[in-house]
Length: 65
Image (cartoon, rainbow, N blue to C red; front, side, top):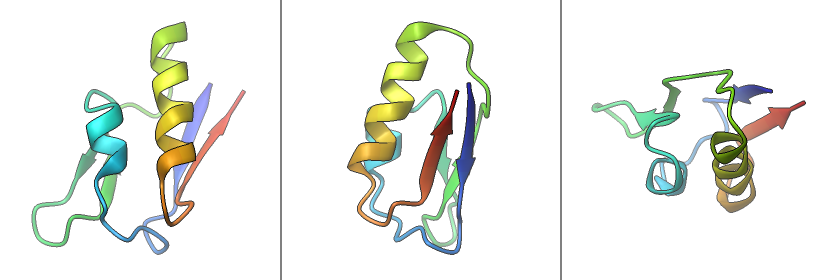
């Protein structure tokens, strides 16, 4: 699995961090998403990353196989 984020699309809602705070974080200055782990390797992490991508109101997160 590989996670990609588009920081230009991010609207800083924080849904990703609420869903998977071990994978996503937000910049202090503007709340834009950052990645803590772009390739988590367990099934639980994949499920949470996919949920975060689905919840993202800006569609700024892509999870690839």
